Length: 255
Image (cartoon, rainbow, N blue to C red; front, side, top):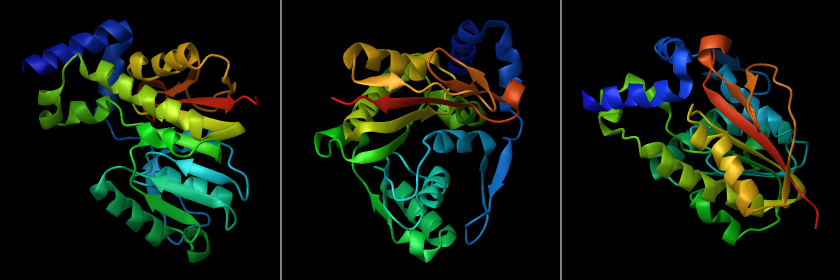
C-alpha cells in the first residue's frame, strides 16, 4: 500500500532512529488509567490525556471552556476541579460526538456538578468572534492526525497523505487563535493534541507567536511524565508507556 509506505517515510524523516520504537509502541495497548474520585462511576482513559486538563489549573468557581470536548474524559476532570460553582462550556461541533459527550457527563458527574456544564455544538475555529475575554480557563484538545489511530486502521491509513498534517495545522491555528480571544486577560489556555507531528504541536504555537505577538506568554511546566519540547511537553509511548499527547500552556497578557 503506497499510503503505508508514504506514512512510514514521512514520520521516519521526522523521528529518525526513534521511529521504529515509536511505531512498535503504537501497536501496544495505551497506558490506561481510571478516574474514580468524585464520579458516579469509573471512567477509563489514556493516562497521558489527564495531563493537559490538569495543566489548565482550574480553580473552584472558574468559568471554563472546553472547545473540543468529546468524548469527555478531560471534561470530567475540568468539571470536578471547577466544582458546583462557576460554569463549564463543553463544546463539540460533531453531533454524533456530542451525543457521546452528553452520555459521559450524565453517567459520571454528580447532578450538582453536571448542572453547571453546558454542552454546545459550535465551530471552535470561530468561537472568538462571538465570545471574547470571557473565560478564566480554555482547553483546546484539537482534532489532529492521531497517528496511533491511523496506524491501527486500514481505512484511515488508506486516506492518509503527506499534506494532511499541514491542513490540520492550519485548522488548529485558527482554533488556538479563537481560544486566545475567548480567554480573559490573565486567563490560561492549554493547547493539546495526540499527534506526533511537530507541525501540529510546537508549529501551531510558533505560528501564534508570529500572528499574535505580545498577546500571551508561555507558562513553563515541568513534566511529571514525558519530555520537554520548545514550547510544551510531549508524552510518547516508547518512553512513557502512555500517549502520545502534546500540550502547551499559555497565559493571556493584560492590556
